[in-house]
Length: 275
Image (cartoon, rainbow, N blue to C red; front, side, top):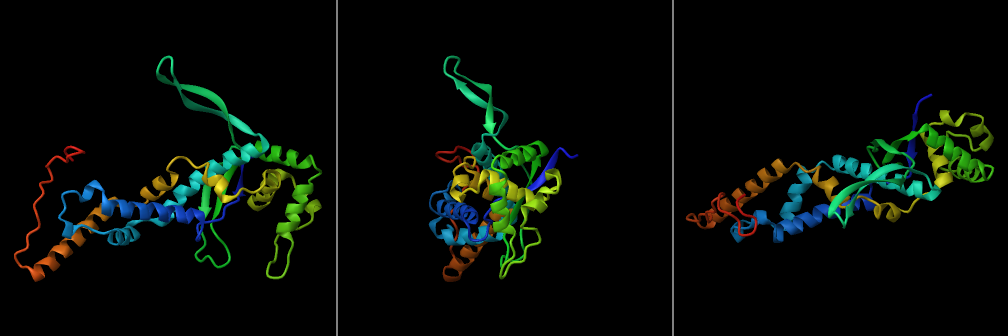
């Protein structure tokens, strides 16, 4: 028997959702900041500066959004794992840094972190979002699955039964490929349940979080790091330089003697020092 199984966790996807909005927000904020006050535009003649719209257009072309979504999905798993562990009081050994005011040094301390032991396995995204959305799959320890099953058993699997009937009963416009009869589910060992069946067990026992519940549990600046890691910054700089060259060419059309102010790249910045 494998030490872990695969489970699909609740996730609203990246189509016009809080999660895609987080990536969009980081991009918009960067474009506005870069246009208005970023150090990279200091010393650049006003007529050669890029505005927020021009910067946003470049970012649109040099950002690998699937990579950004994948990075944010991994942080989502970490947050969901902690949320789900908290719902049922399940923990795992962990360590964290703690500041000792007496010694004035950081120390490592052991503690129990809320967790089901979930780890990111993969994310699948549809080609079109007409009928489905992104799905996140996780490794889950087999022992955790057994524990969830025992918790479900406490009420005679009543919540599990209701969740199965809600999600697996065929109706107009929906054909279920799973039985809606609890007895059929219990006839198979829980260790043999697939990712969808385990997802239903997970929801029946832990519940289903609101997006904001998970959002507030994300690591600090998770959205920024997910977006920033997906940008091709070398290509970004090349495109910025190309647009400035276009601006120079247009200025010379009306003023053939125009010459952009020279700024030595070795000149120390007032606040940053030598670049």
